[in-house]
Image 1 (cartoon, rainbow, N blue to C red):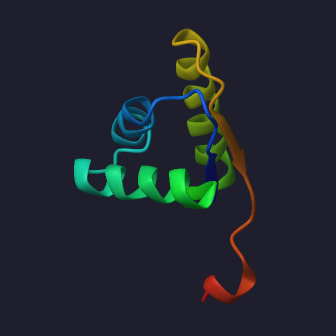
Image 2: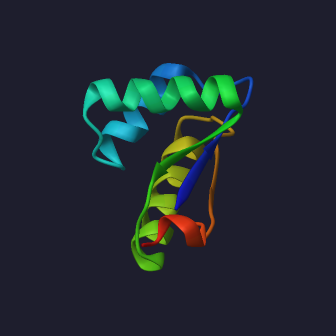
Length: 84
């Protein structure tokens, strides 16, 4: 799963835009995820195979760098109890 991490510099609008463009989330879902990341400090952008997750992380990092935002995005395995 791909995780987005909150910071004090990346705008909420940019996070929503990344969720809509890179992660193909509908607008309402993108806003919900962004607000969760903002309030909880971290949130799941999506669950993907390793290759797809790595590609989405690279795309997000490129966009964040181009827009001069320090948005942090990481990847971790899906917990065992949710893999059924």
